[in-house]
Image (cartoon, rainbow, N blue to C red; front, side, top):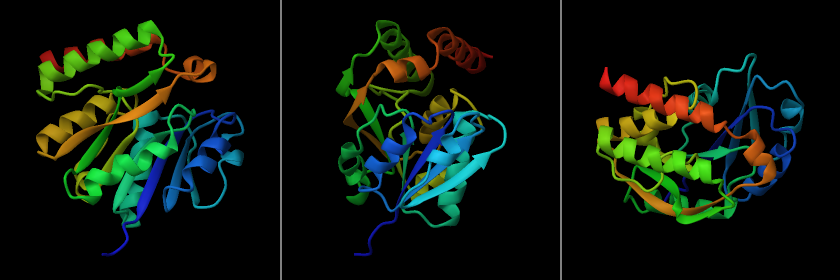
Length: 225
């Protein structure tokens, strides 16, 4: 059997403190790491180097969704068989990747979604937990997808789903857009347990709960009207 080409796509915005360590951990598990520097104003671009790293850059900050789509386009041009989306802030564990891609390798899923609620959510703030639980209810009501974790950035896509999912929502709403397109395109999906660890750094860097709530309200409004 031909070996699958596994790419990781990372949207990075002002992640100079963590990006080097994240890349070092990832290199063992993937064939290529595509870092999209989304208009960072710090040293992210200079520090995002290393074995297997391809560095792309947005001159202005467009948002995580836009950065992921830039990475997706690169992966498609270079005929990636599996693409993993991965955060730059150090919240994920690279050792979860083999389990993440296993359903795709076994041809049991087109897209695999990591779930911190099937696995571990270490030191998760109560307000973040509430926002995530609301998102689960919202997703079920409006898309019919029954999931345990809907805003987890750790995912794996096969080539079919990579070509079916075109992200048009530049910022946080891209997570719900991906789920909508799973439904629309009738992609086979499954969830697997992963670990998300909330550090002081990641909590400070993370989307403010007020902004997350605004995104939630905007999504509901679009669905209704």
